[in-house]
Image (cartoon, rainbow, N blue to C red; front, side, top):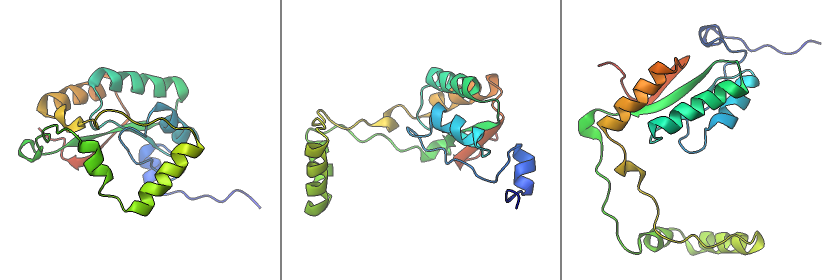
Length: 161
C-alpha cells in the first residue's frame, strides 16, 4: 500500500507537498521551525510581528540556509489608526499579571520551577508594542521585498498601499 496523498490546489499554488501551513507565531516561529515544516512538505512561516528588520533579514537568510523549499513571512499590517499605544510601564506589573491567574495554576508553576531548577524572572515584562508602528511595518515590508520571500502572510490588515 502506497503513501497516502493529501494534495489540494493550495499545494500547487504554494509549491508544497501537503496543505499544512505553520502559523506565523511571533517569537516561536523562527528559522529552525520554519525550515523543519518546509522540509517536511508543508509551508513554514516566520512570525515577525514586532521583529526588528535586520533580525527579520537574518531569519530569512537562515531559513534559506536550512531549506530550499518555499516559506513565508507573517507580519501585522493594521490600519495605522488601529495601532494601540503601549501601556505605560508600572512598577509591580509582573506581580499584578501573575495575580490574575488562579492560585492552583500559580502552585503548578512554582512546583515546575523548583523541579526543573528554573530561576526567578526578574524585572518587568517587555512591552513589544512600544516598537510597533508605521516605521517598523514599512521597514519590515522592505526586507520581505528585498529578500524576495516566496510567500507573504498578514495576520491582520491589507498590504495594499
